[in-house]
Image (cartoon, helix red, strand yellow):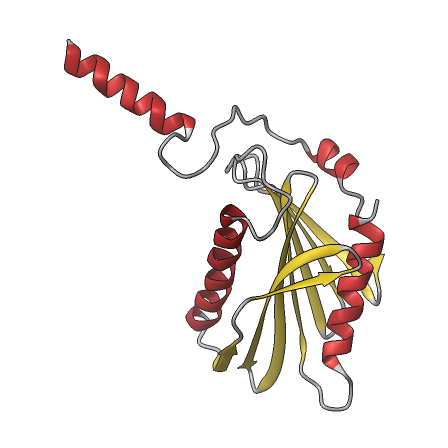
Length: 195
């Protein structure tokens, strides 16, 4: 009987998040309407058009949502999620946020490797402050189908959610591809994060 009670208590502790390093909460699903009310995503960001919204909450509570913007040469994926953690610290230098950034950067690198892209390089993550918003940023370069690509991963915390950007663009020598990325980050800050 004591063993049964101990097992039940252990299962309850694990389900509540104790011992996982994550803060426990009772997570309520964020509906698409609530998501759209909390985060306003314009139809266009720069030259990119909004093409898709994906709800991960339904099948993976805490997985949040993603919004995709595209043009002929550039794609922007925006993710807002909480991993079922309440009280995500706004200080992106906190251990929780740094670990989420490292995990995300590694996931991008592994995905690029899995896709058999060529000439893969990545930068170490760095902390930057842009327009009063702090971000962790990692850069990636790779070749796919003979075309050189530049990709950046940026992570911050906004409205108690991890807010992650992944921008991938053609690495074209005739244009300043890094300026395209910087302008998109500015658009996201001014049109989404400042609201």
